[in-house]
Image (cartoon, rainbow, N blue to C red):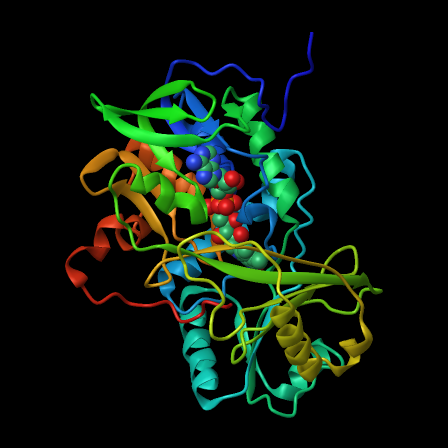
Length: 398
Ligand SMILES: Cc1cc2nc3c(=O)[nH]c(=O)nc-3n(C[C@H](O)[C@H](O)[C@H](O)COP(=O)(O)OP(=O)(O)OC[C@H]3O[C@@H](n4cnc5c(N)ncnc54)[C@H](O)[C@@H]3O)c2cc1C
């Protein structure tokens, strides 16, 4: 007898039909599958065209924070962080969730005003963000170059996770509860089929489902295109690196609001750092996961300006992954206009990983029990129709 697969398999048999087919085996697809298996008896299939952490979910910085500019996003992240606290036990896998906090530093008047406004909002809804001077920030992060810093904001409940076990944990528990996770199988086209949908797969198979969830992240517009759906989210390359390990010296993840630089220290001691290179370096039509020297130079200059002590550090790895960027920086979650059997869960820009614990639960309750969480209105895929002016979240980094 072959061992029970825990991370999905290309060999697992597919049914001809299921209730919910989730396309995309990243954190969004698997968190949704896991929560569906908890709140319903629906037959759920996850299709992943490669291996489970091959997309953005296996390439990100693992930052998790409730410091946002919009009340809905702060609340979603308070919910997500609350879930994260118990998730290692719930999923039975070490997620390396370390709450060392997030420290935002502002070097402009506009950045300072943003931090003050956000801290007031956070205080009003119970998120423990506190403002601090440059000197106080240096007490928290020794060797921080604080000469240009006007104000900082710190929230001790923010933190970092190790993304891979997070995804594996959701997959393992979903499979244990009866979800079929088929890897190395792409959905190459979708078409309406009665009240549901029919997927054509790269293996030559077909799968019918009452509901299809498009959880393909930065590739979501490809699947949508096969149905003639034009949503405005687009892929953008985002680069990141990690260094040789150092003894623990850095508790919070540090973000420079002005440059978009962020860096943290992993539990293994590596400094993990990212930044978006100004001017853009892709055309937003295809997913580009190449690394660039330009990023390395830009990141190095900004990191050393803020932490001169890191100047001699050796970079061990550098990689890129896709942000899935929506025009207002908000996610796109819910039924597709004109095709209610197709649900979208995409457009998460650079913050999908941290939101997935809450989003997976929200989407599962919507599918299984038609529960409408207030954020589903904000995230409605129909909001782009008619050219309405959309409010933009102002704490998007990178
Ligand atoms: C460098 C970098 C740093 C980041 N840092 C952070 C951070 O610190 N905190 C945070 O919260 N977020 C961060 N993000 C964003 C975060 O990684 C994403 O928002 C999140 O992982 C999106 O998850 P997903 O499941 O929607 O997409 P993905 O993980 O990309 O999963 C989509 C999956 O769909 C599969 N797929 C595509 N097309 C098909 C198809 N036709 N059929 C079957 N399968 C298909 C892909 O192979 C992929 O595995 C970062 C992203 C990058 C690139």
